Image (tube, rainbow, N blue to C red; front, side, top):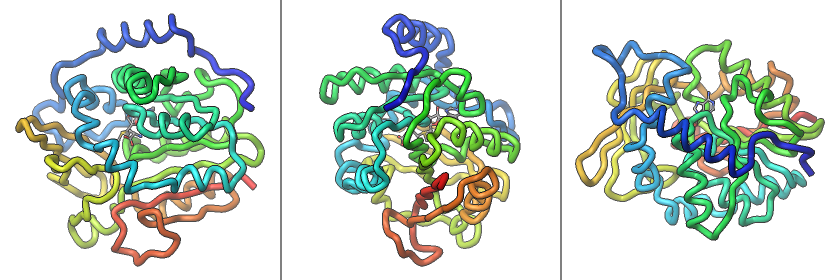
Length: 285
Ligand code: SAM
């Protein structure tokens, strides 16, 4: 069981919602040259209220639930996990899934806007009161106390970090919050394929919404700028760092994880170009 977690009271949540309103940018701000925006701090400006409201249309909870099946739940059970820290809660899809499966779940995110929506979704989908913590990964242990059996960083989130220093810092924080035999599950888009062969997607996993498109508008070795278009013609962008699979595996080892297993689209075997997403399972022992 996890020992203690700071900042999870109703009052704290009210604070989050308050900050969320204060931080709320009506529109995304990428400046006059969006291709120069390559900063780890920028994500809070990208998940603006309008985009957060649309996020669930993009991922389509029901279809995502069906396509993922019990992959993560099975994996966590196989490793004997009970306490799980979801560090990229977003609108709460995995946190709700994990709570429903009986895991002692804590839901963290650096975007107050996202956390407020996740809390709302927790109540809406099953009446769950999510235990939320507003925390940036790079200073995670400042806000999240206690040790967990597993940390999950899902939905292609780690891609928001633009410098190797920030990636190492975040991974070290994930490592530190894990028990001695804990595991980190971290996924990423198959950027190798996009960088080397151009973009194609089966559109089956993660972004499952039918009337939504998620496509790269610009890609180089230091930036993948994706455009998300919705049925009502609204569009938003995310600027992300195109992580290569073997680079992430190397970083995971270098921060101290002893074993790293990588799955492609929820399968143990895959051909290099085929999967849309990779899932790394890194173990401390
Ligand atoms: N996991 C969710 C899903 O699959 O729907 C959300 C994925 S969304 C692509 C990425 C999430 O990571 C956002 O909620 C964002 O606020 C969060 N995030 C990005 N960089 C972060 C950082 N440095 N610290 C904490 N959260 C961060």
